Each structure stands twice: as structure tokens, then as C-alpha cells.
Image (cartoon, rainbow over all chains, first blue to last red; front, side):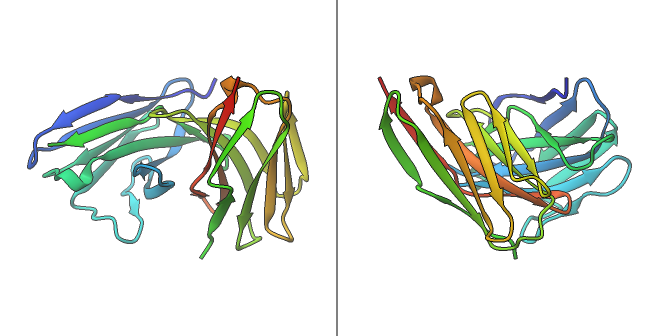
Length: 116
Length: 110
């Protein structure tokens, strides 16, 4: 149980375009989903926290107009990178908390974004 | 501000050795501490979760300890195998967010 999927696993896009990444909890209802970014040889950095049906809370330094997060249902959150630039190239990982346990997070397999 | 540090950054050992990975955190007000494994280009696999009221957790060849008062945790891997080669991440939870260390990259040679 507690499986989280991400789609796509890899995406290459041109500079200036937008790309959407989906995060789904497959066998549980996730009241809270988290989006992390990981640069090479660096740790995971929390970008934003989203609760179903409400606006996401962004960490300091993360542009909310650039990284649009939607958490429309208890099983789906999306991250849209708008007007992508090469510096946005990174590994994006989502996680989800089961509504029965607000502390344990289950992680998706990640999405490798490359902006050319 | 909570900071998580992992030492060493990289470790190479021959197969069969027992080893210890270290994690320290600056603020002892945590709900829990987790150890994850990350293979290159992949997501995270949760290994062990220690609640703040616990001192250790064990799973197979893995044993994790937590000393909240001193802000330290260790991950002990017994009888290491080449398949254990990966990056091991430590993360503490305070509130809803997880704060991660940079990880220890382990290489086990056969």
C-alpha cells in the first residue's frame, strides 16, 4: 500500500515552454502533497506544500507564479513549470501524506526535467 | 532554522563490512526522523522511521538509532553487500515538512 506515482518520469522541453508534472496517490487519499526539487549532488529542497482544495504554501525563494501547483482532488496534485529556463532543469519529487497519518510521507519516483 | 548534516559525504567499503552512517540535526524539536535510500536518478525508498519517543528501529540488516537530546542519529548496516550501494538520506520532520541532509553515497565493492 501507500504508492505514489509521478508522470512523466522524464521530460525534455524547450526554453520558454511550460511543462506539467502529475503526482498521484494510487491507493490512499492524500490530504497533503509536497513538491521537492533536487539538484545534482544536493539534498531535496521543499518547494511547496499543498492541501486538497486550497492554495499551496510556497517556501521562501520559490516563485509561485512560475511553479503553479494544483491539488484538485485527494489523489492528484500537479506542478506546472511555466516559461521554463535551463536553470529549472532538475529532479522534481512529490510526496503525499495519508489522511490517517499526517506525519509519514510517501514519495513518488521523481521526474527528471531538462530544459534546452 | 533546522539544519541536517550527514557525515561522511561518501564512503567506500569492501563487501561484508559493517558500517555506520551519521546524521545530526540542530533543533531537537522533531516529530520523527527517517532514513531513505536513493538510487541514481531514482526516487526515495523509505528504510526506517523513528518516532521522537523511540530510540531505535530495526529492519533486517539495518538498525537506526535516535538520540534526540544530542541531535544525532546513526544508521548501522550489517554485513554490507554490493546491492547496498546507493545514497542514504536522513530527514527530520518538524511540522509537516521534511528537512533533508545531503546524503551519504555508499559504494560497496565485491
